[in-house]
Image 1 (cartoon, helix red, strand yellow):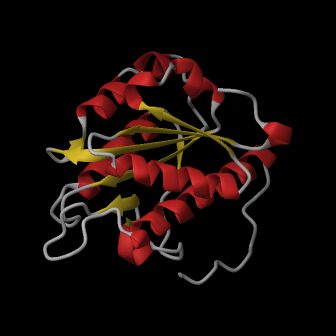
Image 2: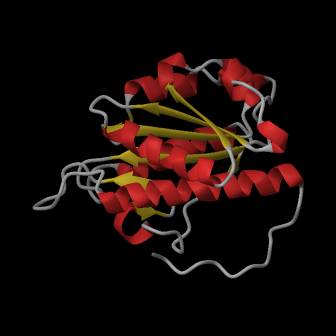
Image 3: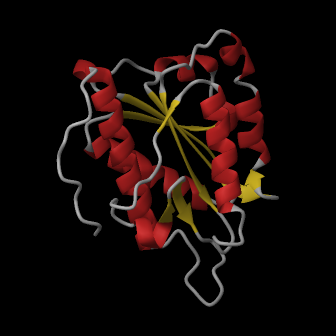
Length: 196
C-alpha cells in the first residue's frame, strides 16, 4: 500500500465476494471514502498481506454471509491476523464492517457483522459503527454496518441503489473518523446531517 498524500487517512477495504454483490458494496464504500479525502485500497481477502494491514489507518472488512457468519475466505483472512494480535500491531487503528446477506433480517447479516467486528475488537481496534443519520441507513444499513439484501422476498435483489448509498455514506463516515483520528482532534460538535 503506497503512502498517503499529505496526511490523508489510508483506508483498506478487504472483502470476500463470490457473486460480485459484496464487491459492489466494497466499491461504493471506497468511493465514499475517497470523496472524503482518503487514500483507499481494495483487496480480496486472500490477496491481503500483513504489510497491507500495518500500513492502513482504518480497516473495513466485508463478506457475503455463509451459515450465519462471513464466507470462508474472509474467515481465513481474519484468522490469519493472529500474528499481528500477538504483537498488538493493529491496536488503535479504526475498524468497520459490511455484508451482503439473504433477506437481511433472517439472512444472518447481524451475526456476520458482529462476528467480523468482534475480531477487529479483539485486535484492539476502534470500531466505527453505522449511525442512523447516515444516508441510506433505513434501506441498507443497521448499527453494525451496511447490508445488501440479496434475496428479499418479493423485492429487488441487492445491492439496490439505496443499499449502495448506505455503503457509500458509511465509507465516507469511516474516512471522516479516520481523518479526525489522524489529527488527534476531539470529535467536532457539529450537527449531524439529516438522513437522505
